Amino acid sequence: AQTVTQSQPEMSVQEAETVTLSCTYDTSESDYYLFWYKQPPSRQMILVIRQEAYKQQNATENRFSVNFQKAAKSFSLKISDSQLGDAAMYFCAYRTPLKGNNDMRFGAGTRLTVKP
Amino acid sequence: GAVVSQHPSRVICKSGTSVKIECRSLDFQATTMFWYRQFPKQSLMLMATSNEGSKATYEQGVEKDKFLINHASLTLSTLTVTSAHPEDSSFYICSARDTRTNEKLFFGSGTQLSVL
Image (cartoon, rainbow over all chains, first blue to last red; front, top):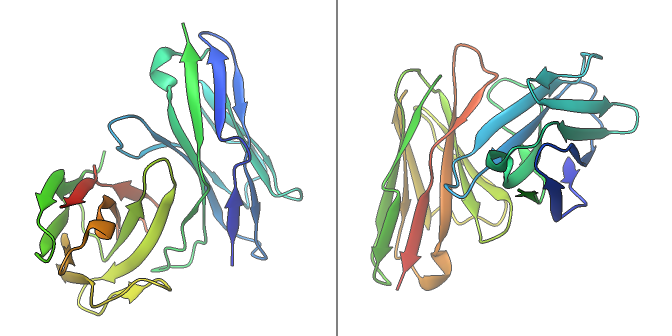
């Protein structure tokens, strides 16, 4: 079974600074999707960024980028120019691309605090 | 973007009663919907996969007679917590996959269930 590990229960960053959240995963599959979701106090799950395993290029979305190391099974999230609104729980997630198969597994989460 | 409506957002009930939670995709069809449970300060745990027109697939350890799932249409899945007990108190989140793309997963805003 696939597992997703987030080794940082809590992280803190100064406003306007950069922070990196770590995520590793274990799988025997060669093709899969990786995600970072943000869960603010409202508890609404918000997709931050998505990476397809067969793409070597790291995904970016404005201030958010990933460092995808397939051989190392590592998928870290970098948040640049951190803003107060970035404070939330961040979950790393893994999913296989099989149709009808969810198999989306979440890590334990990292609580990010942004200091003004 | 696609919207998934989850209702109610909060419910308080007495022990022994049943509670129904609705998950509705508003602007897309969802052959497959998913139900998660989230305890305080913990990650999302997949409970079951709901497939339109067929029986739900439950994860190991989830009682299917306790958590009844009905996916009667391409836009609606319901989760009924039967004979609720205080230990069923939790945050329940649904998600839906857009049938056309089969890639993107959209989350509802969650339901906080408190059983007295």
